[in-house]
Figure 1 (cartoon, rainbow, N blue to C red):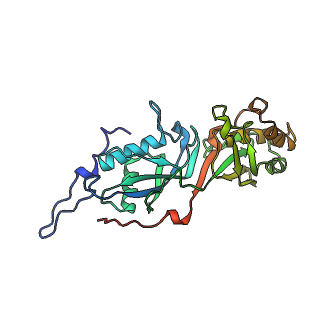
Figure 2: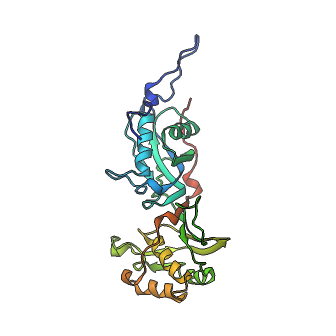
Length: 291
């Protein structure tokens, strides 16, 4: 979104004064009050984004959110996201946090941001978090879904939200293969080569394969994931589902720790960040006066 085409910051607007009543400030001057930490839950269609993370010359979800906050507050606001989703990947439960010193309540922040964000990003909820809450570093778990559609007819509604394969997948073999994923492993075989070697061992808490009609979903949860990890696993599962390898091949790839032996990663369009989990103690009201 262009700053030139968007409404000015609320800090620069004012409502007509009613006789006998003080003028109402919609946002106040940003920074004029003690800041609070605001937690947002967002959903977005990642089709036209180069991922979550801000990057020069490319459209990102973080960039759109920061632009909307700049219009709202008149200031450049630092935003922290819970997960750096890939270009083309989606989110139903991405979490972001930022510090805010204006007068708007969380519900009004949500409404004001949605009025300024493009149609492919939505703030589902806004609430206060404890001081010091950080969307990324306070997160305890991240929960993703990878989705295939296995039917002859190409998708219309889901064309940007699944990996369409025309041959029926053997979801039984895929489910058997998925049993190897839970636990602590070195994920070199499936993650991006750009990941530092020392960081490639991570635990996965849950991995499950579910079919509903023509949709096959991999549901996977962990504290965090390496770059390309889930898509790498999904690429191997598709090979098993097509009958070109047996279920034990996934475990063998995992143990072999060689990215060159694994198939290409699955397309990003099938990947969705479903939820980010936090300790209950992370949330809670902060002392702040809203209009």
